[in-house]
Image (tube, rainbow, N blue to C red; front, side, top):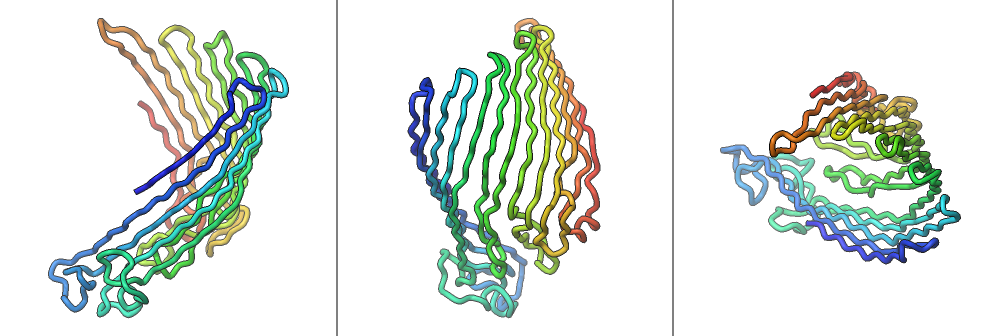
Length: 332
C-alpha cells in the first residue's frame, strides 16, 4: 500500500520572476509473506503454526519520506533564464517481523533467534526489528539561453538521491542513501523549418556511496545491498529526427558512456574498474512511413539497435565467473 500527498503553489508563469514551492509526503507499507513448504515435512521441524513449512518470512517494511521543496526562475533577458531550487528531505525506513527456520531445525536462525512476541500478524515471533532514518538537502541550478525561436542551449547542476534501507537478512547492517551530482550541458534545436530536430547533452556525474546489490558467498541466496563506494560517469547522448516529406520519418539516437569505480568499499571490488551493465556505446535507428490504405491509417517501419559489451559485476571473482555480456544487434 502506498499513499502520496503533495501540495504545490506556483506563481503566474508569465511573470519574469516566478516561483514554485511545496511539501511532499509518502508512506509505503509492504507486507512480505514467503513460505517454503515440503509435503510430509517432519512435524517437529516445522515453523510454528505453519504445517509442512521449512522456512517462513513474515515481515512488514515501512518506507516514509517527507520533503519541502522550492524553485525560483528569473528571466534576465528575453533569451536568458536562470533557475535555482532545493529539496529538503527526511526518510524513515524500517523492517520488522520474522524470517527463518523452525526452532528444532536450526539453532542459528529463525525461531531460535526470536527476542520478542510477534509484531507482524500470524508470525510465530519477532527476530528482526531494524530501522534507519536520514535527512538532507539537495540543490539544482540551471541557465538556459534561447539563441532564437528554434534553438536553445542550457547548463545544469543538479543533485539526486535514493533512500537507504534495511537488508532482508537481519544480521546485516542497513545501507545508507546514495547521492548523484550531475553536471550537464545540452542543446535543443530545430532546423529546416522544423523538419529536422537535433537534441543532445554532455554530462559528468559523481555517484557517492552508491547502493549495490549482490549475493555474497554463504548467504543462502539472499541478496545483500551495500554502499559500494564512489563512481564517476562521463557521457554524451544525442538524437536526431528528420521528416523529409509528409509521412516519412527517420530518427537516430546514440549514447556513449565512460564509467569508473573511483573508490571501492565492497570486498573483492577494485577501484578503476568499469561499472557493470553499462555499455560504452548504444545506438538506435528507425525509419517509419505512414500512409492511408483505403479507410485505414497504415504504416511500415524498420529499426535497428546496438548495445555494446558490458561487464557483470564490480566484484572481481563474480565478474570472472560470469564473464562479459557480449554486444548485440536487434533488427525488426
